Structure formats: structure tokens, C-alpha cells
Amino acid sequence: MLIERNLEAELGTHADLGRRCAVCAVPTVVVDSRIKVEGVPDFPWFRSDELFARLEGKYPLR
Image (cartoon, rainbow, N blue to C red; front, side, top):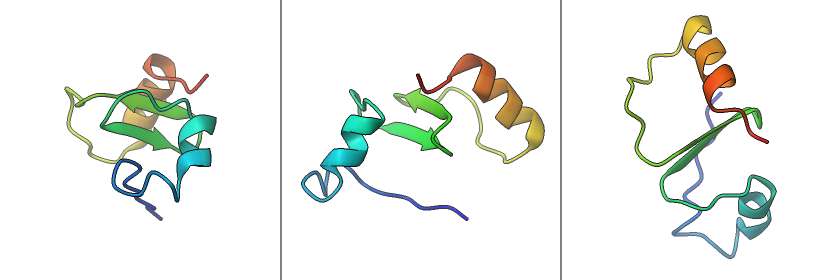
């Protein structure tokens, strides 16, 4: 399931979520509250376990 939220367009509605994930740049992609990619990604988003493992190592949500 994919839930997409445009925090920039709906800032008031999702301000708490933006603070919890420490969103500082647009675009920012947060996956399962475990991965955060800020800015435009330089890789293709093809869903796979391999991609998820690589993203967890390189872009952990701290």
C-alpha cells in the first residue's frame, strides 16, 4: 500500500508528520518510517527487496 502526502501543498494538515520525520527539503520520500530520501533521487524506484535493503543502509530515518 502506498500513501502519498504532499506536505508542501497541505502543510497545515500534515505539519506533525513533517516534524516527526524532520522534513527539511522538498521533495522528501519517507518509506515505512524507516527510510528518508531528501531531494530528487538519483536511482530508479523499482520496488524490490534489494532496493529496500540498499535504501535502509544508505538513507535511514534517524
